[in-house]
Each structure stands twice: as structure tokens, then as C-alpha cells.
Length: 118
Image (tube, rainbow, N blue to C red; front, side, top):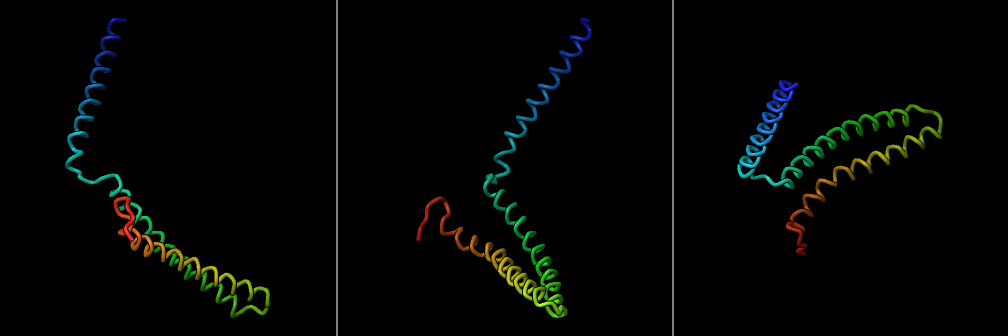
């Protein structure tokens, strides 16, 4: 029983020593990184937005091509009208998604630092 406590005490001491060394390492590396959390978040969001725009363009072109084929081949007027409405929705959604990046890039300097300067 005594041996188990000694082994457990040693493991616990080793664990807390590792935690302390890891914390000290993280604190000492913080000035080196020089990136704030908001800079990192901005970089991640730009990357995610770029991927979303790329995927949305591919999907929009594919679905628009299908809608155009349905519109040109179908003899049913209802199918043609639905394909036309889908084309309108696709174009509007694609324009909105691609405009978001421009809007954010334009507005970001205007509200930089939390102060709006018109």
C-alpha cells in the first residue's frame, strides 16, 4: 500500500512539473508570436471565405447549367418557369456571396480600431 502511494505521488509530481513547464513555455513564447487573436481570426475567416466562394462558384455553374438544359429541352411550361426562377435565384445568390468580400474589404478600413470615421 505504501509503495502505491509513492508511485502515485511521483506520477502526480511529474505530471504537475510537466504542466508547469508547458505553461512557462507558452508564456515565454507569447511575445514571439506577435499576432493578436483578432489578426489570426481575420486570417482564418479570409481563408474560409475564399474556400466558400470557390465552392459556390463551381456549384452555381453546375446547377445553372442543369437549369439551362431543363429550360431548353423541356416541353412542359411549368418546368421551364421553375428553371427560370432557379436561374434567377442562383445568379442573385452568387452575386451576394461574391459581393460580401468586397463589402467587408471596403468597410474594414472605415471602422478600423472601433472608431467610425466617415
